[in-house]
Image (cartoon, helix red, strand yellow):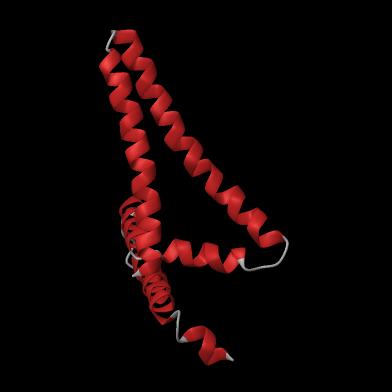
Length: 123
């Protein structure tokens, strides 16, 4: 049973072991915490380590999907808020074309997130 779980997810598990080792070594050597967090965040995003953890949490019956939705909604709200702020400043300056570009940029960003997620699962 354990082999059927670990073998398909060996890459994600190795990435999490590397992240944990990086945290322990970084704290042990008293590295800059902001730099350590940034490197872990970028590395975790590129390797889809956080998506793996969310999928494990989402697999818990009843409560898992609720926890995943609570964790992912703020990201979407932040992206939408940035779009609104860009639109607000464009209106204040009188640039109507910038509003269109901001909305196109946000739509392109959302499509990129979706395509990246799908391609990450396929590859």
